[in-house]
Image 1 (cartoon, rainbow, N blue to C red):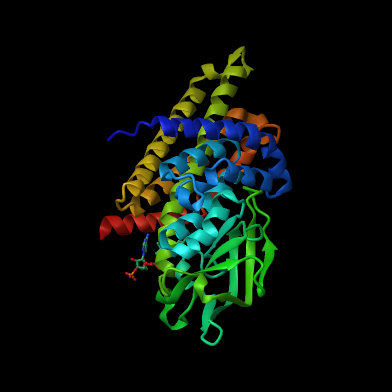
Image 2: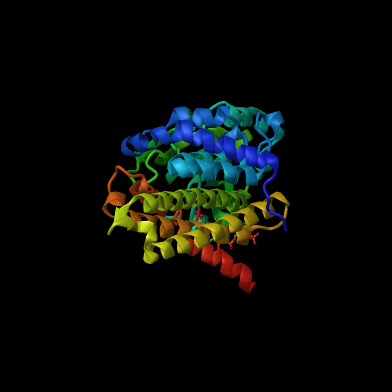
Length: 380
Ligand code: COS
């Protein structure tokens, strides 16, 4: 097995790193403080082609694979995890359309999604359907007379909910069939009957907005059905498998940066007459952090490679996400400890990274859900 990056992948990694340094880092502190959605950065990510990674060029995408997506998301997460989250979550929208959309749907929605600055959202979670995603109660009942789905219900914790132009909604087209009656429907933001409710205040990833979505007799044409009726749960699970690699990449970026910051600080910070890098207790922290980061990196590449090569990867994506997210909290915690009082202050990026890391253990499936997925695969 050879996981050496190709010249093209190295180039993309370098481009993403330069992009993050030029456009993301200077804004990171500010957008964390204000919680403002960084539309300028998102639009630039569309312009340079990051939002189109994984989408064929004929639909306005940049081509490329999930390995490329991992590289871009990781580099951006090094400078700001929220911006990486925005990119990673946005690409789920395109990946669902690429895989399950009709030719007409792809032609209509993919170009604006990949290079036109139209943010996409993925709305699965409901107040009583979080980890138990199959318990969704939002309905989308077909009105045979008008040929429209009438959507009623509430979604919560939806990333980019009020900023998105197009949203993928998971709703019951046949409530009597439970999970097997769940379907995926595309809703455009200006559709009457759709409104945005509460915008959440969060511990971290402040500029990646988290919104409640309300549907009250919201009518969308039946042509907006993605895939088939009743296929929604499988579409959601398939999308989440890919999305989990994206969150893992985000966690890796946070962890790598925290490690780099710690090494730099330990060489500069002098206590007891010498740099604290000379203290063996702290040296061992660096070893522990390095081992975790390297394990996270290779597990992510393995999951992405399996996906790209068309092999099953559900378990490996769960392993990669579980491990990388726990790595991000472990590494940022030690990094903050190494920085001492300075790490706790907002003058350094570590307290933001520490807050941002935690969500990677929660969204796109909690660590506990990944243990369910992994153990089921091992015990079947
Ligand atoms: N890919 C494709 N299909 C899948 C799948 C996957 N990764 N996982 C499950 N399915 C299919 C199953 O094969 C099954 O199909 P059949 O009924 O035809 O056999 C169906 O979906 C139901 O699967 P299962 O019985 O395993 O569903 P559960 O209700 O037990 O849920 C978990 C499984 C817990 C894994 C799922 O609900 C889950 O991932 N929850 C977390 C949700 C989440 O991550 N939310 C984050 C927010 S979304 S942004």
